[in-house]
Image (cartoon, rainbow, N blue to C red; front, side, top):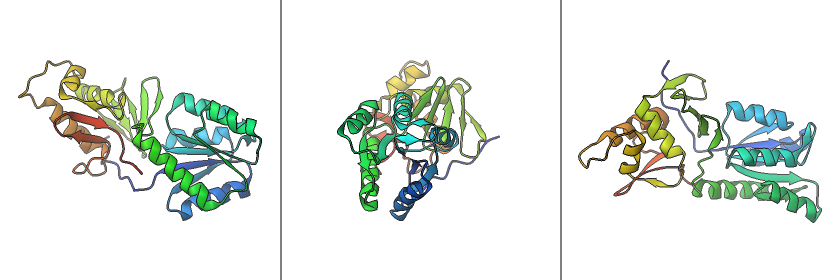
Length: 243
């Protein structure tokens, strides 16, 4: 069953992971008051469950969690994705900061925290992640997650937030895979023609047609694309606009 192109707001999603209800709600409220979308998770299992159904751009986690060590969560998330990661904890020892950064955290904030400082750090980190061309891509086997979509290359389908599959043609899937495998990199029409198994011809508009069809399926506003961006005179690039 086909679905309409997703509707994406200006805000990006942040997950706060903390077993302390008051501390978690304090952080969530601080981010929401700053205009960001924030969700709370009580432990590592909860955040993984959230990320299975709701793409996020940043995870802020306490190091001491009810079901384990927050450092292990940071390590696992970093191994699987390029999203932003911030350790938010009452631990103040230098060694804790160093280990968190070595595990893959991008930043470290100690409790008690100033709400505006946390909001600024989150906003700045999401901007850095976005400008690095990561587009919040999460990978696994044949699946790639970006924005509000899960792309299953093997099955040639997209799954949106309403969990309704959107089928792709073989060539559409090949072009999308080439783009998401190279976030932030300009892909020439020649390279994209190679991806669909056709030789380059200056009069062949196959790539442009495929890009147009993909935009209608994944962009909130195909006339003003944010995910598949045209780089005039060079080709196309996959990546979200800076926060």
